[in-house]
Amino acid sequence: MTLTASLTAALNTVHGEVRVNEPMWRHVSLRIGGNADALVVPHDIDDLQGLVVQAGKAGIPITVIGGTNLLVRDGGIEGIVVSLHRFQDIQPEGASRLYVGGGVRIPHLLNVAAKHGYGGLEFAAGIPGTIAGSVVMNAGTARGEMKDALQAIHVLDTEGQLRVLQADTLEFGYRCSTLPSGIIVGVWLNIIPSPVKQVSMSIKALLRKRKQTQPVTLPSAGCAFRNPRGDSAGRLIEQAGFKGYRVGDAAISTLHANFVVNVGRATARDVISLIEHVRSGVNMKTGTWLDLELTIVGREQG
Image (cartoon, rainbow, N blue to C red; front, side):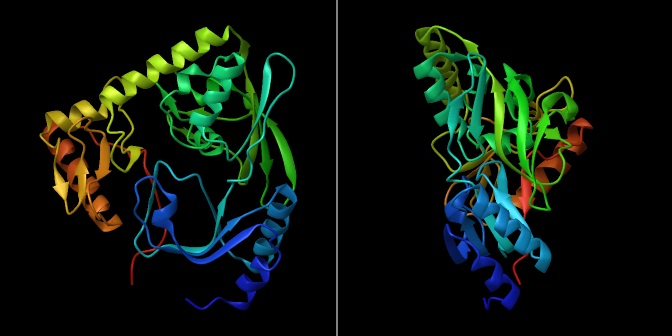
């Protein structure tokens, strides 16, 4: 790939890490995906602001990734992919409020919560992604959703301006949200001061259950489909006979039928073919059309 002058100019403003023609399979949990034109790991908020402004002026698309619940097409991603890997702050603000940088992964956040007795976040045990991505999709478990703990978000808008938006002014649905355009650089969460042992034991118990019921040893993006109201996507897929079904090296997990796993060298085309076949088959056999929870980004392979 040859960089355009405008893309080169935008990348030259970055003080953090820049990787050109970067394979995206290295950065997503499903271990699938073509190359991004450029991957940027901004050094800090100022660095990210400069990039957003420069890219906006040049009309260069920016895609922010957390790495989970994501399928990158085999042709990769046009423009700039941003990783918030350096946005790792976890700072208590009083007894019941916690600021968390957008790049913090939920498992790390829960380790900190267990160590310091930050209760109220235990429901998130088993969510693998970053806090920013988890808020955008309102990730959750049977115990709760991100909106339940959210107090406010810290957003860098498309004009490069930082804004604080209170949670009660935002709209969330089941595994979705309608947040304003921009990049979540951090969030404020409500926490409940709790005994360290109590928080730790609760998190460990939920993680043990996850290991028993989900395919944690194989590359996966998490749940592929949203649960229909009053039912389970995994149950419907299993009922339709697709547990273990494969297209190439993409397969429906034999442990949990709502997980697509990469059992070898699966391509995005394999995964998309698998998803289309399964949702059509489930619809034919049960009358239910499954909506995707998995986000698909990028371009088709030429």
